[in-house]
Length: 359
Image 1: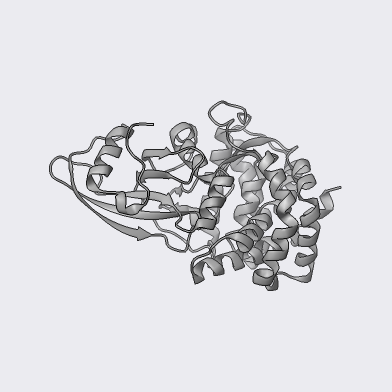
Image 2 (image 1 turned 60 degrees about the horizontal axis):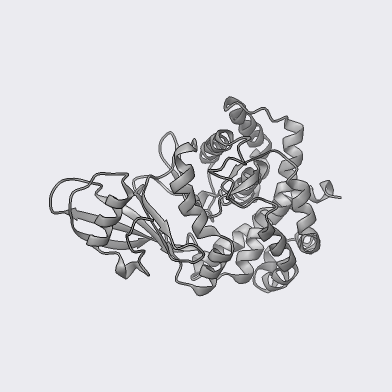
């Protein structure tokens, strides 16, 4: 894109490279970079990439004291998934083509580039280290959940009815051919998932998994008849950073298009404990619809609730099964994360009886 070579790994991210990348990106003016200090952050939070904080020392002039550098995962299985699912290209495209039009608090991308069709990519972005993070395993508080819902509604409203806009039309949808291929893999993934995480599911959850394994594609087609917008598709608390009065949304690797209910179900199904969701879910759904209305979108509550119940069946359950079956989770925290996602998402799908809404 710019003539700046994409590093093969973090060892090639030097002071000279970082200076050249930020200048090529044209988003920020900086002085000459004398040296940088790289420290890995966010270990065990994501499985698709590695994130580093680069502390910067300038020989003259000014610039950000630090930036965040994002690179692909070192795990071969995870990189292959990132390529096949288009996740690396999606995030680079988001920052280069969509971020400025998305009503959300997102980090500024100073430089983003990828070698198309590969896992060779890099993103240099604003460091939001001063914001607080919440462990998805522990789950959000009620106040944090409301803040996350506010941000999500703003994202959806800003792209409502624009799913075919050239800036976003490249993004895969909830009925993309990749989803059909994934549906064909579901039975095998389900068998691989159960020995690792099947004990986190209730009897009803296991029965639901059996049903999804042979009905996933048809369910996606039915669900996708609902109104479309831009979807984050991995909107969970590990990908949010909390300020006093706003929420920063990061990790846009799963960016897609489809019914808005997907993102809300994914957030509430996985980022709070089962007990907290059951206690607050109805109120939170109402709050989302009110915020969506403030953004100019009228979504009848009855229609949305139907779509929301369906979303729990095909969304977080599939993510839990895919990651639990095939990804190199790398560490104990990653295993705990998938275990919590499996338990919570399948419990939500069972609680809301979304399976009953599919033929």
